[in-house]
Amino acid sequence: MSSPTAGRSKAAHMPSDVTPGLTLFDRFATSAAHFASRAWFFTLCVLLVVLWAPTYFLVGSIDTWQLIINTVTTIVTFLLVALLQNTETRSDEATQDKLNAIALGLSDLMSHIAESGDHAKLRGEIAELRQAVGLEEKESA
Image 1 (tube, one colour):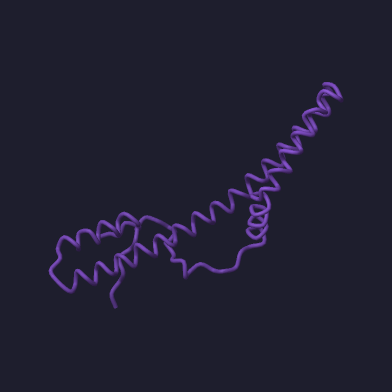
Image 2 (cartoon, rainbow, N blue to C red):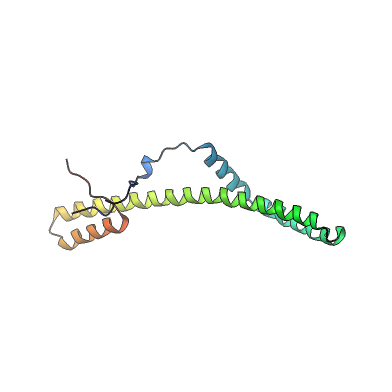
């Protein structure tokens, strides 16, 4: 019987397998995410928009001024999205690792209960759980 993850090149890992060290970029992205998620940062952004809006009428419709503002805000937005996506991806991966650990523990518990008595239905549910979360069968020694 082939395992559900036989065709996958990346093996699943557990939370205890994850290295605690983050790369320089990951640490920077985490710091940027914390910085950008503060209420005072949002207030600062709103204040900048409120201060910028009247300059359109005071300065007139100078295309260069509008181009500069639009370019700067686009660049900042693009960079923040990239940094926040990095932290979100790492968070999703950590959550998936925790769910895999829970599923593996549940599968092991169900296997132990199934072995201690005649629970044919439970054996089928174990296989279904392992297939649903992509856990490979353990090789017995």
